[in-house]
Image 1: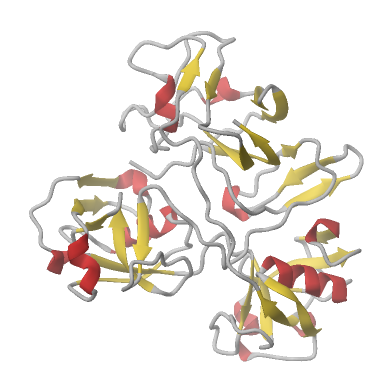
Image 2: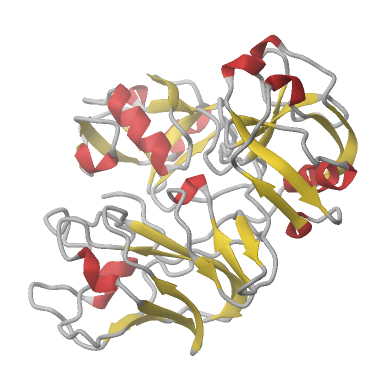
Length: 383
């Protein structure tokens, strides 16, 4: 069972979209969602990208430090938890480590270990055992929620930088810069940023995305030996104000690394509120139900595996005009909606599906073959 965010809410803007003036729509392009495009209706400028300091809460897998606080940044080792309990190392492998790191929106695993390192381990039940993965994708894994383990077999895991960390600063040894005032090589989606059109507004906007108040300075006259290790991923950043919503940019470039941007920020601000899966296990309904237990509740059960054979976690109406809805417990700020498709067949059935919040259309699902998830970005309240 893979961690599912069928419909997610956030307490801060956490996407990257591009404004299309001709249509007054914003269009998504974000590595975290497969570099697919999709309309964000009724918004006339780009939302904020995710930042590395966002605390994030995942429904199944988390990591905690020795004080039981969630590990939310890359390259930090933590006690691995599954549904709030520890994970036994029986059959655990590098494949399992990679697959679980990806579920937590990290790019990959750094290392894993087992043992009794934290005093808090005895506070947790052991919730997962016999994790066997034939590849680095969670769909290839089997596991048991019963165990024959002790806490000396608890898994500790370290994952690399989060996929959602669109902008980060690196020092000359490729460590992430977290201190204010320290100059670092600016990376976007793991690649450098070219200085074409870059200005003070762009510097301030990007520092804001990384949870700083503003920029201290920026330059293209610094050089690190590590620069050639990276592709150039961003160019022509033009910002009319210090807010990212005012910026346009290109992910194509005509630059060399001599034009890489170096940036320092000042005024560290508090971490933002965590991601919350608002729809998890909330009341769901649908027009009618296809045979074979395709209940509406399957779409919010925390399992995003689109293969019917794995857990039957697919909701399915029995009519081409069917509808599905979930009711949230209260009026809440919603920042994006993730829609997961069936994968072993029938992907065309979601084509042109209309997505509404409280009766207001917020997006359409295009036909996307071979892609499980489609994301609609918005920033509105609803239930």
